[in-house]
Structure formats: structure tokens, C-alpha cells
Image 1 (cartoon, rainbow, N blue to C red):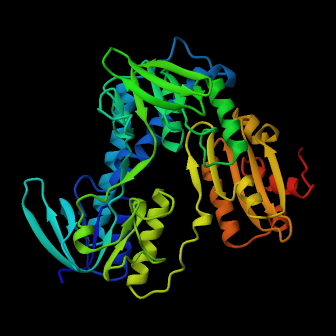
Image 2: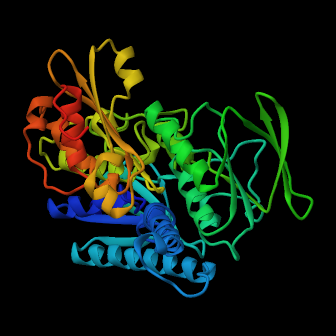
Length: 463
């Protein structure tokens, strides 16, 4: 065998798996057809956060007077410069992964990887030349792409996916965003902040529909106040792109409406990259676009594994990384603990941010728990008042019987930096009373977690 491990795909699942494999003494190679770092580093997590930061800075400037700062003249968003900054940050991160590959003595094989049987990978380069490589263990980490709906075909010009949304040649004056998950809401927030007229169309009754209902409804009110038009319980039936503006036919509870916009952004989820990678020929089982694996990411074929977006579970970068580490540690003969998919934090980086983990209130009640619920609004937080970021709240859901923290739901500034505390608390099975007695620094946004826990047990001080 040429290698102990070959990883097909270098996203946050693939490159992390490769590095961990190398650390454990396994001779490792990574196959990548595009840029190292995959979608997350190049076209997802990182560049979108750069765009959002530019939008936030622009928003700060426009409200500088509220902080006692005078600015002469009107600030303008330089769209080209914003995009250039975002692309520069993504390029820098990809170069960082290149460095990590060299540091860990991982060979990078450029091209499209395909299973050619047990222990064999064919890699086809851009020039069409094919090479074959062998390994005792092959990890599939091919990730996903923007999902297309039959009635919302992407042409890359007027009807676009998230990749085009990051590098448009000019800022559109108007945009319809179809789908209100993390991708849709983040782009809606960014473009609205820099002056684009944005409408969000969501099929379900609430935006960010995987979140707790209170968070969804509160975020919708805040985004509407910011100027975003939100249409829930609505479906895009068709898009006419023949004219200068797109005509978007939307079916609502009250009848059909036609929206006009320069750009339609399809943000209706992710499709997995399973085509052409040799699953059928090798006999690897998959179902509904997901490779079937066990708790350690082994497929039904010995020596072939799958991680990340192409297996069931949350399609998130940090999940893919954790799966990659668990997978290679098991390969190396260690005894990793299977991942608890009910303790995975989810984050949406709009302003204000959304972060959550565990049960929603509705799911906890449906599971039969008797609940104690504590909420603390940031309007009562000294740090939030000083920062001018009073929107949002912390909501904690406890099992009334044993004090277990079942779920946490956060809406507010920087809450994506605070959710890890809750993940650790749940991992350690910390009770509500222990959390109340955990002294948090003052003044911070994070002390709202302690206050929310106290509110659940009628011990809250600052409400």
C-alpha cells in the first residue's frame, strides 16, 4: 500500500482527519480537486464571516452618533473592496492549510478522487491524466454544494447560490433570498446592512426554523425593524429571468404575489457530493444522499469510511472535524467516545447572532420532560447596555426532576462565543444549581447565562 490513509476531500472534515492521522503515525495523503480547506474555508464559514464583519462595521459607522462619535460626510460601502477583503482572508486561510499539510508531512494529490475498489483510489487531474493510489484506509469527505430546487434553477447570473453571492460583480439594489436557514439569514443580513433591499421567503412558519420558536419570532421582529421584508409560510413557485429584473412568483396564505429583484439567492439547503466517486462500483451503501456508516464512520465495505456532510447528522464544519478525529483515532486503535449529536452547537452569524444546543422547548415537552425554563433579556445586562447591543436574550431549559440542562437558546451580540460554555456544562452533566453558583465575571454578556439559570429556579437577581 502507498499509504495508511487516503482522505478524499480537504474540507474541515478531511484536512482535520488527515492531520490527526499523521499525528498518530499513519502515512497520509489528501485528494483535493479545488483549494485546500474545502467549501468552509474558501466559500463558506470564513469568507461569509468576513462579509458580515464589513456589514457590521458599516452599520456601526452609520450609528456612530449614538456612541458620541461625529463623522463628517456620508459613509459608503465599497462593495468591490468588501469582496476583495473577504477573498483575501479565505486565500490566507487556505494557505494556512497548505502549511499544515507540509508540517504534518501529508501528501496533497490534486484532482478528482474516485474509489476503484477496496484499498484503491483513482485521481484524475485537470489535464485528464489519471493515477492510482492505494491505502489500507480510505476516508470519504467530499462535502456538499448548494441544493437546487426544480422550480428554482440556478443560472449563476440572476438566480444564484452562496458561492456567487460572495463574489457578485456589483452590489445589487434588490435581492430575494429563498430559504431562511443560517446561509439565507446571514446573506440577507449582510446585503441589507450595506443598503440592498432584501426580501426573505421561507416555506415554514418561522425563520431559522430549526431554532427554538421564541428565538425565531424575536429574530424576525429584529430583522424586520432593520428593514428586511420577511415572508413566512410562503413558497417560490417560479422565477422569470427574461427581463431586466427577476419576477419571483410567491405563493402565500393570502394568494400569489410577484416580487421584483435584481438577484434571487437560493439558500434552500445543501446537496451532498456523492456523484462519480465510485460508491456504486465499490458497493458502498448510501440512502437519500447520505452514506450509511456506524458510530465510527465505517461503511459496509472494510477499509472505507465517510464523514462530514455526506453522512447523517448536522451538516456543520465543527461536526465534520469531530467526526474526522473520531474516525482516525478508531483506525489507529484508540478508543474514542462516539459523538453525542444532541450536544452539537449551532450558530447563525447575523446581527444579532443566534446560538443553540440541545432540546428546544417544544422538543423537550414532546420528549415528556417536566421543565424549568429561565430567561434573561440583554436589555437587563449592563455590558449589553454599555455596548449598545440590548437586543435578544438567553433561554435555558432544565429537566425539573434532576436539574439537567436540556437545551440553551441564545439571541444577541457575540452569543456564538458563549454557547461553548453550555456545551461543556451539558457534557459534564452540570445541574442548574451548580450553574447558578458558578461565578461569572461582571460586566459581561456571559453573566446572562448565570442569570437565566437563576431565573429558572426563582433566584434571579437583576430582573
